[in-house]
Image 1 (cartoon, helix red, strand yellow):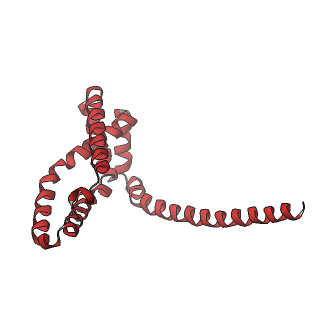
Image 2: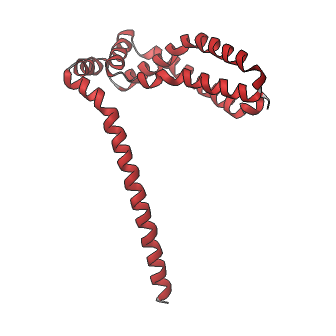
Image 3: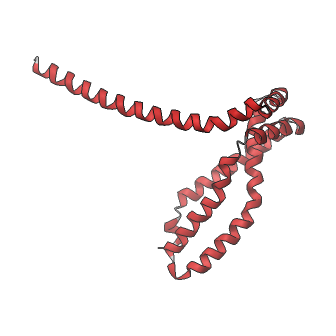
Length: 171
């Protein structure tokens, strides 16, 4: 298997287009949002720990890349593992690009004063409780929604089938 087969051109094109969009929006937004506004956004992002879910992106990408290359050429597994680790370490410095985009997004959606108020709130005991509990509440809520969807789906199929039989028998 060649590398081209492992990474289709469409995926590469999509990544390039996404990166171009991030850069274009970041360039525009930096012209319109002050440094103090971005600092307020950074403070909220830090206190709410919204960045934590992104910590696994690079390790996951490194693992996926390593796996794809090893599958393509298993005889070079050790070399691939070593190179993938080196490249992942080199790319770690690019994390600041994602961080900036997140801060930018907060700043685009909240005024500087609102961000300052949010930072104060999230630094409180209740704010920290909210930060800690939202993932759990969200996970349970999503699970409940899936269960409800499955139940309603089954119910809907049954009711439609029954109605079709009823209407077919009545003709």
